[in-house]
Length: 88
Image (cartoon, rainbow, N blue to C red):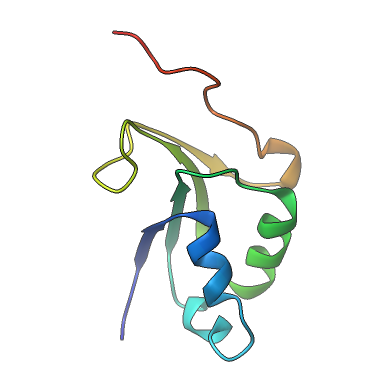
């Protein structure tokens, strides 16, 4: 399948990094991960399997939508977007 964009949790993307599935990430253009802690270890594994732009996402319900995204370009930039809910 020609998947360009993935929105999921870090634990779900880890399942795709199992050796027999990791090649499915090669043509993906963007990966948004949210709802759980995004570790530097996972980031390092991801960049070995894909050239996709990788985003750390936050939203009231990441499954429905994310209201804030941050493009991750190095493990040093991997950080929590918010430590508390945004108040509008």
